[in-house]
Amino acid sequence: MLQSIRDKSGSKIAYVILSLLMAAFMFFGIQGYFVASSDSGVARVGSAEISSGAYRERMNETLQRMRTMMGDSFRSDFFNTPQYKRQLVDQLVDEELMTQAGAAAGVAVSDARLREEIRKIEAFHVNGAFDGKQYALVLQANQMTVEQFEQRMRRDLAVRELPSQIAASALVSDADVDAYLRLRDQLRSFRYLALQAPVVGADQISDEEAKAHFLKNVEKYATKEQVSLEYIELNAATLAVPPADEALLRERYEQQKATRFGSGDQRLASHILVAVAADAAADAQKAALAKAEGLAGRIRGGEAFDAVARSASDDVGSKESGGDLGWIEKTGTFEPAFEEALFGLQVGAVSDPVRTDQGYHLIHVRETRAANFKPFEEVRSELEAEYAVSEREQLYGERFNDLVDESFASPGSLEPTAKALEAVIQKTELFDRDFGGGIAMNPKVREAAFSDPVLLERNNSEPIEIGENHVVVVRLLEHKPSLPRKLEEVSTEVKAALAIERQGKQAKDEADALLKRLRAGESLDALAASAKAEVAVAEGVGRNAMNHDAKLVGEAFKLARPAEGKTSTALVQGGDQRYVLIELTAVTDVDLKTLDAAARDAARASLKSGLASSDNEALRDALRQRVEITVHEDRL
Image 1 (cartoon, one colour):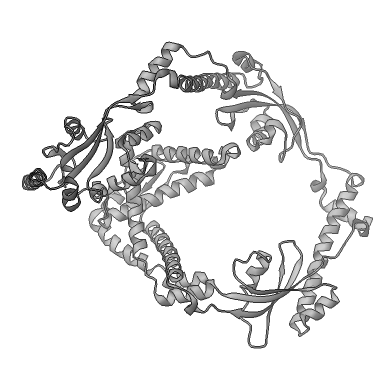
Image 2 (cartoon, rainbow, N blue to C red):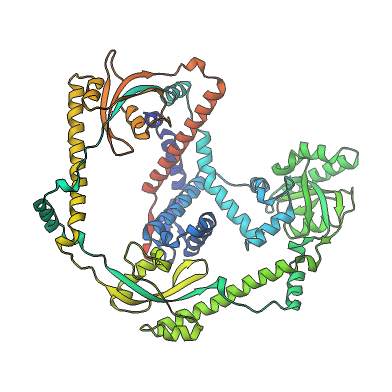
């Protein structure tokens, strides 16, 4: 019922937007969709290619994020399935569709918007404010340049821009809010009778029944196929590396001192931007310069720099704070012309207009801070630990290559590989396809153990990743095939399975008979007496009630509102697998007059979010139908 509110308003907005976008595509982009070209990407969306590099980058980002979130429980094999790979490509396709649709609709991400969004990211903040040095450090730690990060940010903003504008256009009327609140806050009262399951013991199953069942299911009672393995393990965490050389540690300290262990000369700065594009016409350039010179004149005439910035700056990100840019170090975060002018000013000085790609800046230095670095002795242990990690990773890479080469060169034995790596060949106990001990607890190891190359061809496996920088190569040691068992061996197991099956059937038959009697007019109390059970009562229960079985509550809210003096009934299997008779007695609607404005606003926001999600999903589906999309699954 709640979904029906969303469906009624549907995705009309999305289709109106789509019709407008299609007109724009006709004039600006559609011709590219029919130009054939050869490429090596994983997909093509209209005329745009999704490159293999973009796909690998997204996959690596996903793996890293999930590894951080899941820790030791992380399993990379889940992400290596054709289904997940296709899901990832579909995400990239949807993003490209939205980017193209936004471009066709004239949606663009300005430089000012980009700077504003970057300044909001808390990872770049120090003491609650954007810090240029922190910005550079975070990007460096993630092995990204400023240009790479800003390009990615601009792309991500472009992907989100059209959906966010669609979300802003979602309309929710007061009547919609009322209907939603009536359904959401509705209360229901019901009574229910939990039936005791009949008891069927294995002794109630005859030998003839057991034999008939066994003969139909011989394979079900066979022994499990089992194997044991020998393996070589390579784990970066256990590799021994020589201690760090003192001179090397000092060299690393000098290389990283400016970005990690303190700060160089800094300036607490403010600026005013008069925006003008780098390729703007000469008249526009001249007008912007004249405006910047005029603002500089006002400041030198006595007006406060922050007041002028608030009234005249074109930098949305810093305008409200009086042009404040925080503490800035010469790290390349800002354009060279800007940094050169900034670090050439004295405290209190205001620069002449400085030209950058964004326009003309007036720069004001409020304070300076001298360089301050931690001494080498204070960070030596940290550098030494990092050195050990990097050396282990490097050694692991070398040993991994040796492992691959040797195990491939001698597929019929692990001895040459063990000798080359100076490793010990280890062994597992027997295990089956579903469970094992030691390394066989890892599903990837069990999958490899029962694969054709290992089980049938008796070759070494490929390296199997069982942790971060932790692999094994396995080889079959012993194989015990699945064998049929005699009825005498499994008679007890067979009778127990048949008893459970019969018990379930009897329970359902008895519950159906009681439901029939209830609907024929017998009272729930009378049925309870005959079943030697008690009727439970649930008064004024909401949709998300926690004090009754969730399946029962869900069923109660599915039942039709009972007529005056009547009840609605149903049979459901509860969370404890027992059958339960439900009798809905009353439905109580919320009094909308008792809800304050805050409750209504929250409901409206929830509905708008749902509508926006539906509209964007409808738009994506419609775009997928109208734009030619090709996915090369063989390249994933």
